[in-house]
Image (cartoon, rainbow, N blue to C red; front, side):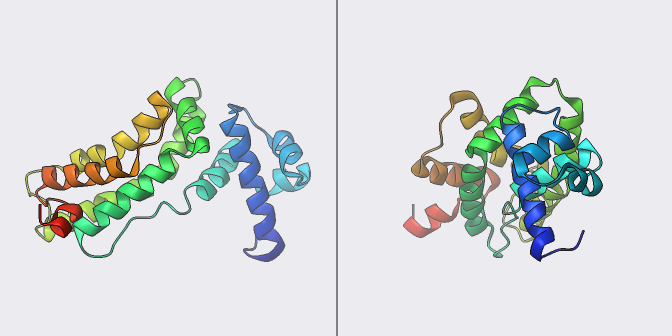
Length: 194
């Protein structure tokens, strides 16, 4: 499939349709379902995305397109930006619905597709944490995955379990807390002289 123009519009319509179906809990979606919701012909859907895994991949790629890794160079600044992005992403209603499906553990194909899709992103996040450690911004004895879990977990758990977003002041507090726990203090603390 060529990028840009009509192909890009079709790709976006199919991805949006897959996300809508997944958000509604329809993990057993197929080309007919996607064609019905997207308005793209079943033949086109089947030709460009012949497997459920590819449909999942199209949906997840569109869904996580803006979830990149902050790399300004300063860990404390990036930590604030990262917390902002994670708070917005994981409180998005579509993401909450997808996490409900994942938490139910009844759709191993979907779980596998999600974990496969996120693996390169997780690796880029780990690389940013390792970069901060190499620069002396994170204590050397704190494992990378411990930092990653501390960073991501609150933003996944609060919308999923409590059905609410994390208020912006609390997002700042979480950034400062992770900064202190990793040995940096956090950007907010530097800015206020606390």
